[in-house]
Image (cartoon, rainbow, N blue to C red; front, side):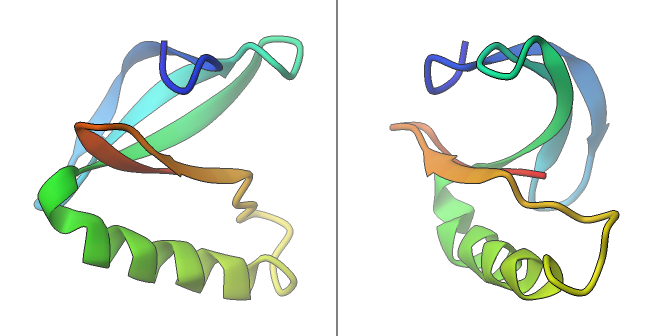
Length: 79
């Protein structure tokens, strides 16, 4: 359970800088979300992607940044 909210279901994919997981948002009636998790060492890249997604939020109905948060081990972006 991440951030007392997201229950990871399974891994969807892995890239050079982050891993994407399918997760259940326990605060939104078990809605399925994609959770992109960066290792703590890639926090600059994660912040850059978060800022980019924020800028796209108004331009696209497909991309919706719902939350961004960090844990002691990871910097995560939820899309």
